[in-house]
Length: 115
Length: 174
Image (cartoon, helix red, strand yellow):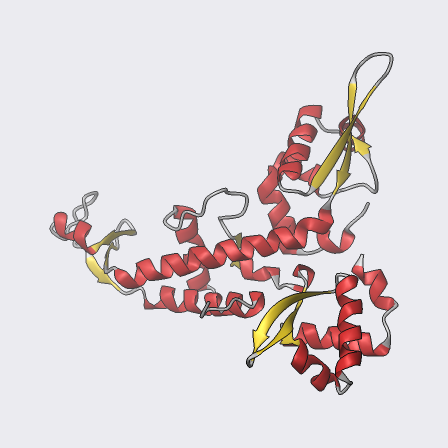
């Protein structure tokens, strides 16, 4: 589990992980600048975090050059966005998404009234 | 028991409950460490073997459990050894978030493209064309159908769509 491996991170890796989580997603070319480390060091930090599955790293084009988009893993997502009131997304466990189902309408009513 | 940190999350509890139902919940909510047979689980939890098997296969279909089969040399019987794979829960829920996003954006378009009429007595909503066919009278109770705003609904959908786009890093221009 990542909770254990997080204890073994270096200070820079910990800061890097925090940065990815807080930003919700950041390009590698911004990542090392924000961390105030060299690009080479930034790249080593990213390698290490990605290898431990603590962050996702996907190729991306950003401001005209090739870089990577660094994002938190699914584990860090806010799953409560599936809820409306105390109702879970009605699409859960269903093969097909029926946007006109009564259950989805009920879910939307919950969403509108919880505000 | 394993995977405590997941099981404490109320959304994950709801999710498991939605998948396996109330009868399967004792199985889904108490995943043991390592491998276990259906019979061991039934005995430990005091459940019918059929309910345990049903829950395990639902978890298997959702990538949340795996099994390997062993054949007893003497009796020829097959034993299923189950492993709970709850580390897949975050990816599964991420997939559900994408599904919800799709559902919301489709439904939002429908809400913006149509005008609605409401029977306040029955709480039933009709599209404009339907309402016109009924001469703006409720087919159930005969009450007058009133024009209905859906701005609050669309606003709520917009907020949740924005939150999902942000959380999932969806590229809305793609």
